[in-house]
Length: 107
Picture 1: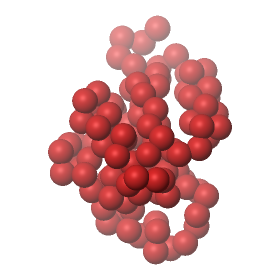
Picture 2: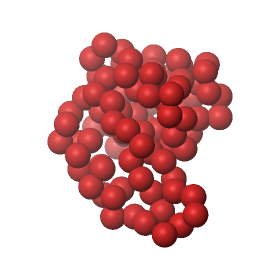
Picture 3: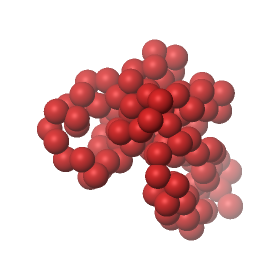
């Protein structure tokens, strides 16, 4: 078991997506799911409280979308590493997420 686990926050409004990502992460000895959020507002709260190493963020969620959540997280934690996971491949969504502070995106 590694000395320092990579702690990951999963933010997605679809439970099946969160569960699938959590299952894949659980297979890695060097990673753990720190928490899961079903909307952007909860993602911001958990990112501030738990200070995960990596945040996997969906763009389109209720309460607060991913782009707005990224901006709030960046304001509180400029060092946060945020990766956008989305099924939407529109350039505008991706551009807005990167402008807000996401470091990468996966389609």
